[in-house]
Image (tube, rainbow, N blue to C red; front, side, top):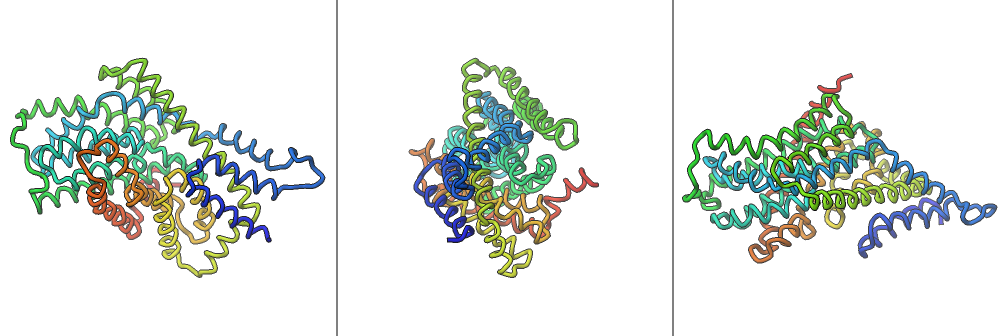
Length: 447
């Protein structure tokens, strides 16, 4: 058996173990070390002197000392502390009041709340769960269509992994070896495009069929100044925190790690400002931050070990030769890679796709002359579908978990489908108009 064939077997065994439900990080480590022991075996050495163990230790040290990854626990802490700051209900209510004259005002308010809150936390499960508890019962009580309400919350809650400051983009930057600052700049256009398309769809859909979102008849009347005060109190502090963190990164005032530290402090200050801070909340936020950070670091250690052995055995050359042998054009290459990522999104989460499978395609990006930031944004948009594609749409299961009596899973799936189509439309628009992703980084960071 030649080494390249062994590399393909290595990849196949890993996929089988994943479908059997084994933990991703430890499966990567076990398969990488197992096949690496064979790849680096030298009869003249003692068993424990095999180079795979040295490689494993070096990868662990590299992850721990990676400057880009330092911002991960800080942004996570910011998200977890804001999640517990008890401002989501105030934010949703104030937006609902401020947008009360728009068709489907509650759905529009829910989408904006999801977008802002998801951006602040970057934790899809938390946003969908909290909005499922807060906004879905309110919309259903107001007579909103069950499918529309479910789709708004599940789709809006996933935007946090796309719009900066996003943990996913930090992980991608560390995986691909590109600038996280430029990646943040590239993500603003696609993120705002997708959020705008969601809002436009809801408003147009309600205009065409007002029965989907009846107007509230018993709503308390607010004057203009009362409305401004409500928005100022709930919307402005969180928006200022997000914009200050993101702006300091984009305009070179702070590194991502420094901005993340500022965001973590700002998240704590917001919790104090809204009277939600307690030692219990702080302890929970620290615990969840440490837990999630450990998961990300273990994934990196495992994936870098796996990728090193896979490459050493010639696996990357096999895939590269296969892709080049197809005589693909640049557009065909992009379509094929996005189709593969889309399919992988059914059984896998974005962390596994980014850390394990994306590096396989990265060496081909330069060969086909594709801008690495444009390619990154296509993948970032595509990964939205991993949360929205039945039957493994995790956003749907998050919502069903907190609203099992009020909504059926099949109805949530039906509500998701139009938003899944919108994600694909956004990808098509970015294919046609690459400036959606590239204009801002090229303008801010022109050589």
